[in-house]
Structures are given as structure tokens and as C-alpha cells.
Image (tube, rainbow, N blue to C red; front, side, top):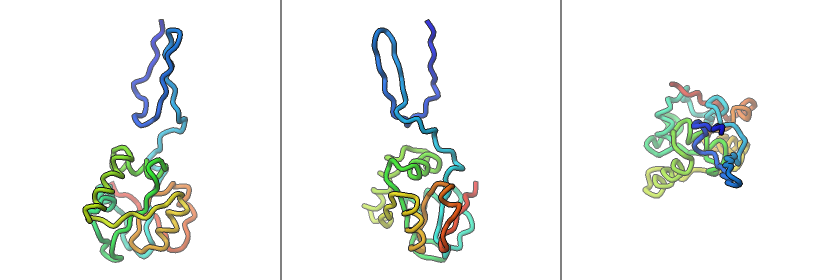
Length: 160
């Protein structure tokens, strides 16, 4: 009997296990490859003079520990739903937790009054528009969507 399996399945992929006739089949319900760090970028309103941001500061901004920018006032987070690629990238690559865990933390901070309620964005275009219209806004978007940003929006590079 051949035993082929992998202990390297991504931990957040939904899977289906089918057992029948002595055979176990494990199949991924999502064939999309995991997002790479360079597939997404942070964007900011262009009025924000911040040149780059350490990863640790991104966490502070997205959880209300840092409440204001030095030059444009209140931090406004723009987020998609739990299952959007940008939210999953932010949770995985920046927070290193599941998207649900990250969003629960953000909701707790909003409830405690530690941060402003995030603006909702269902698509990258909506996130870009929210950032363009809000001086203190920050969002994660696919790098492809950031290739042609409108006036008023800029990429915010991460410093490691």
C-alpha cells in the first residue's frame, strides 16, 4: 500500500474528506494558491506624508493602538469582508492569524472605543475610492489594482 500525504497543507484551506471502499480522499475545496506577500500592498491617502511603515506599526494602526497619523489626523482603516483576499492577506502576512481572529480583535477595539469603526470595501476599487476620499485612510489591496492608482492615493511601502 502506498501512503502519500502531505503535512504541508495550508492550515486555512477548507477541505473535504471522503471515505469509501477503503480509500480516503482529501480534496481542497479551493484551488487558489495562498497569497504571497508581494501580491498585495498597503495604500494611503496621498495627503498622508508617511514614507514607509514597519509591519509592527501596521498592526498598531489596524487595531487602534496608533490612533492618529502625524500629519493627517485620525487613522481610518478600510477593510473587506473576512473572505476577501486582501483581508486574508492582511491577517496572514501581517498579523499571522486567521482573518476571523483579526476581525474579532478589530471589533473588540471598536466596541471598547479604542478605534474608529473601519470603512467597508467589497472590492479593491471600493477600497481605493474610500482611501482617496478619506485623508487618514489605509487599506490593503492587490498589487495589480495598485498599478494604476488615481490621484489622491499612494502606495505605502512596508519597512522590514
